[in-house]
Image (cartoon, rainbow, N blue to C red; front, side, top):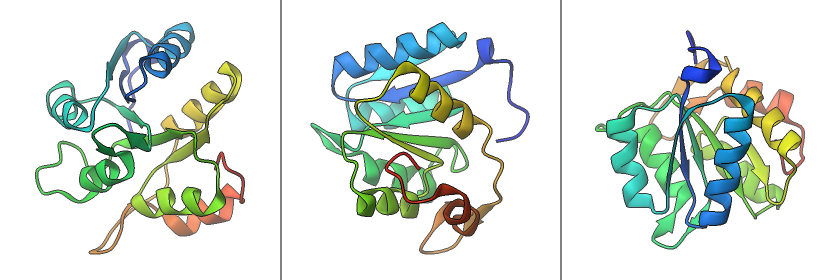
Length: 160
């Protein structure tokens, strides 16, 4: 994402149905200096908030009570009415299996981190995602940051 504002002016959206994780991520980012943070507990509310809040980054849980965060990421990347197909997306989930990391990468995420994690681990991933400058690919089957660059630099860890 180009031309990011100072971290105190960044707008971040967190979508996680667990209020504990929304609060924890909010607190991590606030301690980093981010002030405009919204947290939502459902897929539907996340879609609405993406449209009206216009965040610079979207942090999404994989499995939520009303649906799959991965499907929401695909909608953000592909839907004609998406408010920002090019938004940086970070998947924050309890799933750490390598095949899930690859599924998330194929959905168009910029970063992935498996719960539980430390504040330091999260902030490193958050900063990495915000600074992601890979070219954006758009096709019928994929929309997101360049996968060839992602695969070359990601390795095979659950926090790719």
